[in-house]
Image (cartoon, rainbow, N blue to C red):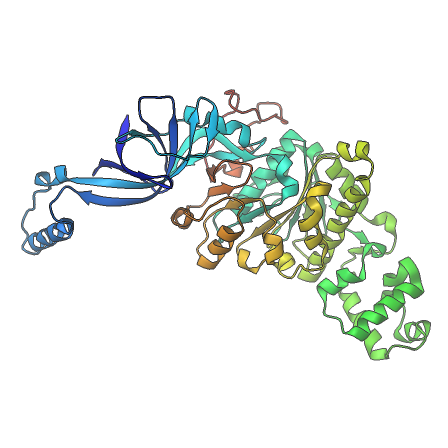
Length: 516
């Protein structure tokens, strides 16, 4: 069915006319055909305007005045007399064109009065090769859903991912979908730091979590609190903590830093435990009485705050670090529940584990055979602005710069991209953009995106919960998606093999989902 006809175009903007009664939405994906060739132009609606066939440009405004006068006198105005003169104009951005299964960017324009119609699933089959094996939802056109699976490739993990939205727009739901897809296909390592306790069992009675997938061999859970289900205690070894890690938690004076360095030299690998357990005078004497007792006391008080919950083990055999790395290299999802920790302890744990993963992969790089055997790994952080806000000189900055080479990527989940370090956010190649109300946040993403999303400001502002744009250099344009509601997605394959290989374009995927 024809929606309209092309009435004006430039290479970067296509306009079409349609009936005044036809609903056209910002974000709709449409197709333009001239009927003379196999070429199909793919366009996205950026704006919608009213128009009228009239001699004067202000006719619509003047006619509205006539209607208002009629309303004021309880008169009846006959719309039937003018509706034939009214129309709507869709203002669109060309996405490109297809000839058969080949897609190319548009460098020309469709013919005059070409037919404009709504897209169907078959029109977007060419996208199959771009959308990867980690499914998160369905293709969206405006607020209509096209039964076409949408996702990303796990091979993009080391290129870094950003998930950005205001509260209530579906960030956590999307994260659980990503994790569930990884659990099902078992090709990639996915490490999630959860400060809110919502990924394990959903956190609320009406919600579901990763344990409801019944894929225990694909999920490993570590927690500093008791959970109602299988999990491991969360501990790292004192000798895995570096002075730079402590510097991320606290501001140290130059004298305090020198004291820490002297203690590391004096006590060796046990330096942190010795500082924590020895009294001030013993340390004072062991360090040659070079540092004021007050300096040592301040350091000890700060160390007491991170040792208080038993998260730091003096025995390196009690550390989870090696186990976490083994699970990730075995293509598992690893969940680190830090929901009962203070921010300092949470940051310390995430720093120690992230550096260990990066260092291990880096050490394997020199042996091509061993390195080729390990899967890409993604490290995901909720409330990422707390960790990545002042990231210069940290392991996260190093991963952002070098992780691609060593198969380690960052995933930042945040409400406020403007608070994330500019160097790090510039490294994110794939962006999941859900609703963002703050203009500055949208500007930052537009400037850092590896794909031109400068014309999508209207669409981003209009996104409803669970609607997203996926901007990535691995796709030909920003993909509009409707994200699966996790509570339905986790049930979708219960009657099938738990670990499905997402196959695209072959009709094997179940489309019977509700959406978040």
